[in-house]
Length: 219
Image 1 (cartoon, one colour):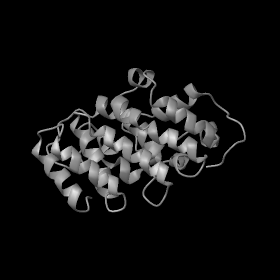
Image 2 (cartoon, rainbow, N blue to C red; image 1 turned 180 degrees about the vertical axis):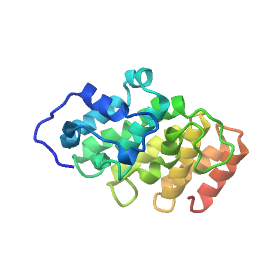
Image 3 (cartoon, rainbow, N blue to C red; image 1 turned 90 degrees about the vertical axis):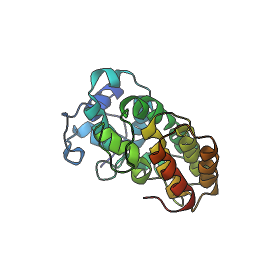
């Protein structure tokens, strides 16, 4: 994507372009207006943060459109906007953005990913957004070695917060991420072990998954 020196569209226009894609469209084939493609990273980052707390999105768009919108923001191959969190801003701005991912869990995943977890894996019970929830820390461009210690700590804190949810898909998402990060980030393993002592679910599938994540590599 090219980048203009000044923003060429406002937040509402960007929001409608990202979340107003036709229902069930393949995110990889989604089309943006040129102004959306040219929007500077600084504005994109601000718009993403704003979208994470924007109630209008949930009133105006179907869950399938919201799932597509999140794919467009966070999935490499759909856009390069994930670079906002790793390369295209100063460290403190990245940390703020990473911390704001708690709003992704509380305002999006908890609200739209409501199907109980009957098995851990690529579950599309609630459509695309279930996939985004489960695969978030796989697709997110930040990972151990790709960010500063403070950035990594902020991300782990988001996962730790998600583990306090009683939403089963949020729990699996956080466990999945912590399991991947545990070999490189000791705090990730500590969080999993602490949660297993007082889990927020009785779902055996999730508890078994967490046990595996705390002791071995989780895919």
